[in-house]
Every structure is written in structure tokens, then in C-alpha cells.
Figure 1 (spheres, rainbow, N blue to C red):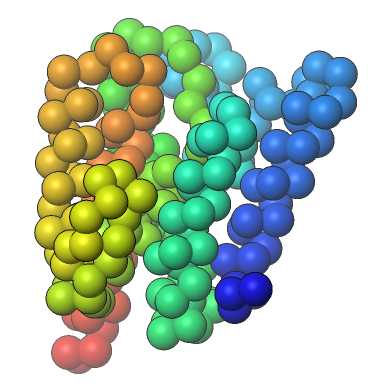
Figure 2 (cartoon, rainbow, N blue to C red):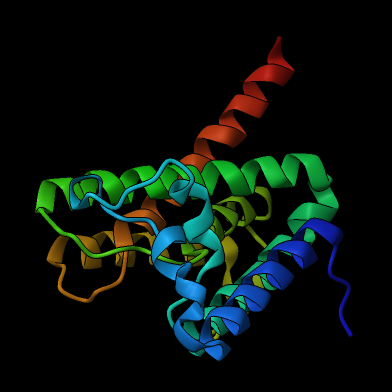
Length: 195
């Protein structure tokens, strides 16, 4: 069994636990709608949703790929940074992912809720590419070995293209917002070292 550091493990357990709870119990206790990120103009937005949406997932594949990515990139980042700094980056990525999605849904007039740890995961992906740019990784899609910096650039470009062309039902701007949050946090930390 691969090593999973404590913050990554806790995040994964909460996500899996909530997925099981909401999908195995009748009606999911009615909490899914309360914890998902609803657009500002929907009348259902609550102040806690920019955090809680990151722990919910739409289906088993959404959960699997997010947890796989969290383990793949998050475990090493948490080991390098420590739990506190790693948790700060996860939170910053989730919050900026939520902010980007809220702006997008407001501009587009959408009333659909957002769920998933993808904003936080894309923040980890960007962080991994910045910290280990020449590390060769083997992504699931496409299964071609490539340097982390190219993988991040390709996925960022795909997300931007898909977000602009729209229509997929995936929160591409939440993913891009998560990357922005990680970039801002890392630059903040680097600026603090210069003082």
C-alpha cells in the first residue's frame, strides 16, 4: 500500500465517506443540495459552499479520478511542504476554483450547482509542475510518458479551450481557478522568502 500523508488521507476519506453517505442513504439526507456550490443568482447560494462543494462528487468515476489525482500529486507535495502549507494550498485552490465558477455562472446565467475536488486537484497539478517540472510522469490519458511541465501546460490549455467552447457540463473554469489559486499561493510563499 503506498504511503498517503495525513492531510491527503483525511481529504480522501471525507470525500469517499460523503459520497457513500449521500449515495447509499435515501435522498442523501437532503444535504447534497445544501453543500454543493450554487450560483450566486440561484437563490440557493450559502457562504459555506465555496469550501463544502470540494468534498462532493457527482458519480463514482468523478470520485475515482479526483482521488487518484489527489494521491498521485498530493502525497508528494504534502511530504515536501508539510501538512499545514499543503492544506493552505488545497484551500486556496478550492476557494479560487469556486470564485471562478461563481463568476462564470453569473456571467452565463447558469443555475446549475458545482461539486468536486477538481479545483483543488488542478491546483495540486500546477504546483507539481512548478516544483518538479522535469519529473517524468505517466498520465492515464494519454498514457504517454511526459515531463510534468508539459502535462500541466497541456491540461491547462485543454481546460481553457473546453471552458471557452462550453457545453460539456464540466466546471472547466473551476479547474482553471484552482490553478490560479495555487499559482498565487506559491508566489506569495516565494515572495515571503525574499523579505
